Image (cartoon, rainbow, N blue to C red):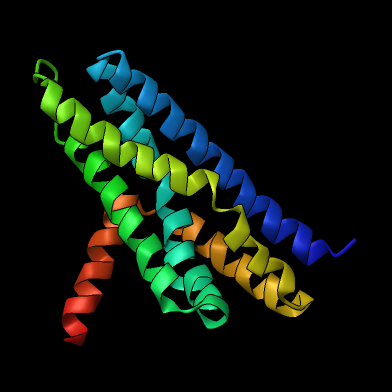
Amino acid sequence: MDQGRTSLESAFLADQQVLTRGFDELLRALETDDLDLAVQVAGRLDREAGSHVEFEEEVLYPLAAGARGGVEAESLVHEHGLALEAISRLSAMAAGDELTSQLRRWLIERVQIGRDHAVRFGSLSSHLTTLDDIRKRELLERFETYRKRGRSWREYASSSMDDFLKSE
């Protein structure tokens, strides 16, 4: 069996499953009005998703864009942004804050987008299977570098925006 494929795909898909479960847990917390749990899960998702989102946006989406076109990649980055809005809003909340029905609906909509994105992502990850062993090992090293860096999702998004503004 191709070890590069197994390691890269396994690492990436394992992350995908962690994020899917996290979004599921966050949805349940919001649906049951458990704001304390929702804030806790949002913080965990923020920490767990950083390297994964960075790999998707910096490596996988550009790779897939070559095969599928940039419009889909832009749409996927937009979905990240919507889900991150919910994570950021929840992370800013404190004990005793009110979760109004309007805010709850707004959060659930964005978290559902993140969950749906995570669930249907398998078709894009198939682009990893088309790479040769050397490229897979390079990408696995890059993925592991992102993980070691340990940036949260919000930290990555902030640095990505800073880089974009500098390029303007």
